[in-house]
Image (cartoon, rainbow, N blue to C red):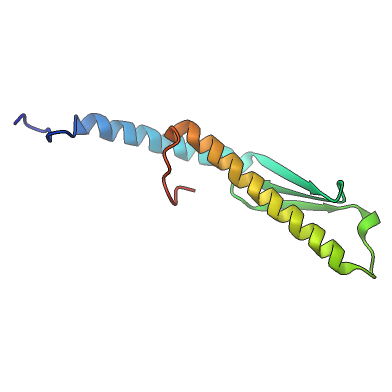
Amino acid sequence: MARGRFPGMGNMGNMMKQVQKMQKQMEELQRQLEEKEVEASVGGGAVIAKANGKKEILSIKIDESVVDPEDVEMLEDLILAAVNEALRNAEEMVTKEMAKITGGMNIPGLF
């Protein structure tokens, strides 16, 4: 058996270099995603929520025409829908960008 090799495992040193390269790329991507924004609009633009790649809500805009003191529940529903959609959009953005580095490998807990 050749020194430093495991049968069927290939060159471990080369594999470790590839893993380290991927790790650096993911760290850089994470920094870039913190600056990227996505938004979601509901109710025909009545409520707009923005999120970033860290899946943080950055802002919520509410059209004053939907602010009705007699129907607060509708406004709450619109806000909830906008926030949830913005977070889904952020998750989708992160997943797409991460797939570019990982080649589509599913690595649970990565982000």
